[in-house]
Length: 561
View 1 (cartoon, rainbow, N blue to C red):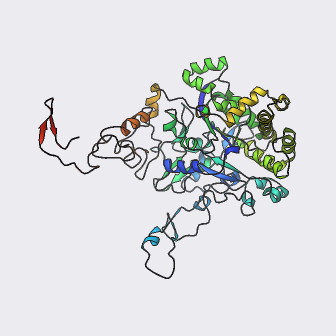
View 2 (view 1 turned 180 degrees about the vertical axis):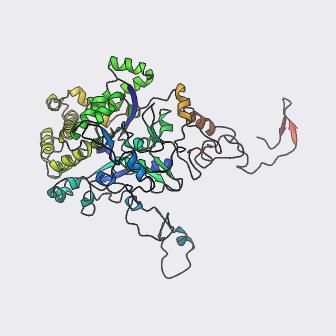
């Protein structure tokens, strides 16, 4: 057994309101640069729908993820080394710009400087790629709120697996929002697909990153990722992807998308897993057994044998403690309400989802029945096969049992807590019906409904002994000039220098914000200045008078205050 730590995320889909705040803040932090206008490390998809990029789940077309051979071995669906070598200069398994969308801006100058005329001036959309006029026909969430309409329904890869009756009735069944980021998989196919070795998985916390110095722009990682969460910067010629905000994670702060989430639906924490069994779990024969196999390699952080082995494998005590307090372990293993996205890709994804109960409740409430009654909810979960089947295709490779189990526990929690709030009655029969105790149901309710900041985000800081291995990784992103998100541009911490992204950076930034002088001589960075101290050249010089002597004998200018 080889114990390793993995930074993981769980999202409660019942709380997502589709506001896209997470997407916008991530965009501003990471991809607000030339060459990545179409890139969304975090996007929110409306389901059912085709997603972003368009139809990314159709692996028969894209060839992402792993497949199992007859001999029981895993191979890349996109092909091995020889196949990649044959198409290294012309890769047909890539989404085109129309599968994403052609980024655009508006001709705002027309509104400001248009000559006087009979017609009201219009700011026409202009392509950011060609500069020509264009017609907007697709974007990152064009199908927002269409939720299975006839306009996009026929292109949904999951619905195509289901019957025509389901397709015809689905728009009346439900819709929900699905936020997506890179899965930071335990068995990442993007890393295995990279010919230059630029993609790698950090041993410290399992975050998958791109070394911008090593990347040669072959784009095999884009083909290899089944979630299509690796993008190509057409200006720098480099691959880019979600970094799980590792500069924040290293200092114990949550990701930007988690920090700014309006619905507070994200949970972050460490899990311990057996690295020696990853290939075995990813290679099980039956796709429907992949979920159970992945759960089996996640280790109990309270097990004395696991703790002892973790110490021998170099995991620090505070990291072990963080894994014990992790909400991720409880939601996945103890409560069994969190499920991975498309386990059939065999990448062992580590961003998990709590399936939405709201569509079922909405159907019940819309029919005039009590949407919080346990018996009604349990019966509805059994009968509403359309949403159950769709969720199973998303989260459990088509196996309905785990999805039904999770929804029944969520329904039991809803009914049990209603009894406490209204009647002050703890009905243990409801808890026993889903294999739980009343105390466990209340604990799950506290975590899912009213958890505080420190309960949702249990993130240990990186250690000083790890700083050297973390600081010089050339995997961060950049403004227009090249790799390294901290260079001589507007987003930098020390402009014009090579900036290590280490444990100390957070404290360095705090010091710079309150410093008397700018952090870089000769340059004032207004993004890093909080108004304290003086900065040469920022304000007009003050008028000075003749020098006089203070009471203690020190010279002082009359203009000084």
